[in-house]
Image 1 (cartoon, helix red, strand yellow):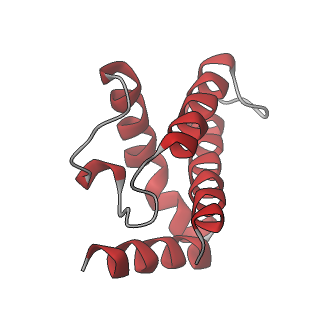
Image 2 (image 1 turned 135 degrees about the vertical axis):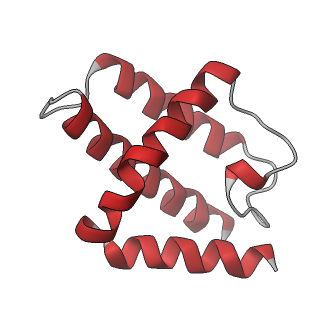
Amino acid sequence: MTVAKKRAAEKQVVELMIKSYCKHTHHEKQLCASCQDLLLYACQRIDCCPFMAVKTFCSSCKVHCYSLEKRSQIRDVMKKSGWRMLFHHPILLLKHGLSSRRRHK
């Protein structure tokens, strides 16, 4: 997989998780302002990631490019929407987990 495709896949997963989080936490059909801000921030971080070619999960990266506040927000999003991905986007979640695990070895 090329680096550009990996970036696009990472953005897709993050976007789906943030949308799921916002829908179930803030009860909004569209992304609220704070979730939109977090999505834009996450996409900027993904675009700037110097380790994308060998990256696994951001939480296991030696360099944390998220600010403390945004890292806390994204951790909350992952915790609350990650399990929902099993029901709504199981194949995407499986691909993401397997490709990240493969790169981690």
